[in-house]
Image (tube, rainbow, N blue to C red; front, top):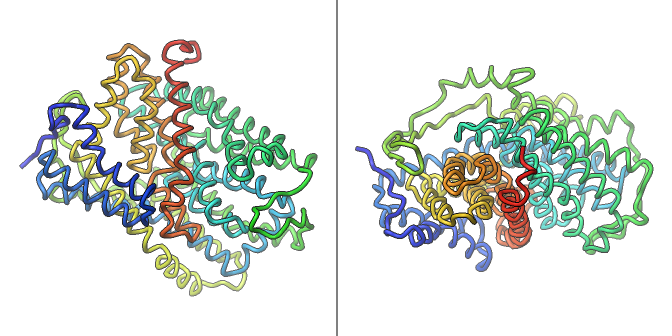
Length: 547
């Protein structure tokens, strides 16, 4: 028997929207004020969502529980699969001693923590985001920074902030592709609008990172390198998104930034290297005691990882993704007791439509599987580290991540029940009631979606249809609001409980999710307000900026 969603159960869209947001308010309170552990905050948020869906929205309890279980399953695979395999590769390099060579090779380029953050968190993280997405870059880069000696809180927070710039074009452009698909808008046009919004934020992210680490005085000491990183990334992102395609902005931007920084640091160095106050004073750049062959061998797991993740995500050049997806296509289940039993209605969809609940066990095509294979292949180059040690390390990694696994599963369960009950749509519709001010709130809606789901792709799937409808109703360019959903959504990535769980798992801060949330919250709000002001201006006064 089917159940029809009701987006205004209390007769007032504002009141219904506030009630629908109760689970989010609870998570914000638990993380930001009570400083609760991530799994505790997630549990309270999930319980409140279950109660609201059943007793306010009238959702049958069986459907509510089924949606939670479906979301939890998606959290375990493929999301947690990415986190576990990424941390496993890192742990193998540490156990084998190869990470000491990586640290030495980076120290030979620069001993400055600010520049190391630009290289790893910003540039290398953007490359991984462009190829994989879905938590992979934060998992890898945060672990690497801690291994280099970074303060764990700063390692987690910096990687979350750095992950802002590339998110909209992550995983070979999937968020923008989904935005175009769910709205039937031209993909290249959506890409061009995002490419005329996000670079205005991306160009400042390197400065934002360095100021966060060392203050304005410390940032001015490495301002030339900060400018090189920001201009290289934002300029390439703008050009690729506008004149090449929607699939490559992150990859091209990251490569240009890495090369640009390497070349620049050959002719310029900061007057003195900066370390965190609780570290030993910097000894300056030292000569790397390892040979080129040893350095390449130490970096090989990450080079292999980047190459395989790119191949796994690519459906345009080599086409491996299409082959793997075709093999996996029959590995799915139609979630029992939920599939097509919930009916979505207008104005969320043009006409009544059954809400599918298809869980795909895409074992081969999942990004985590690419990382798994990269780790296995790396055994051929990691000295004195065989398969038995790798298997032992894998199980130790799973044990290490037991609380993040639980947290992510509950957060995805929360996201799914809010989607299937209609609570997420209620919040979206409440924003559309703002009339001519809607362009200002459009990025904030995307920000809310990413906070809720942990994914710019999911937020676009959730809200872009409403963004288009609302824009047409208030008389602004629908391409602008659809793009703003993605551009604003990236600012919510750093405060998403899912992302924070990944970051704390990678840095050994499990149980300190509230600390990381408070670290990133102010940055997230400031960034989304910048995007909101830009979108509002582009809707009316700066419309000439749009294609």
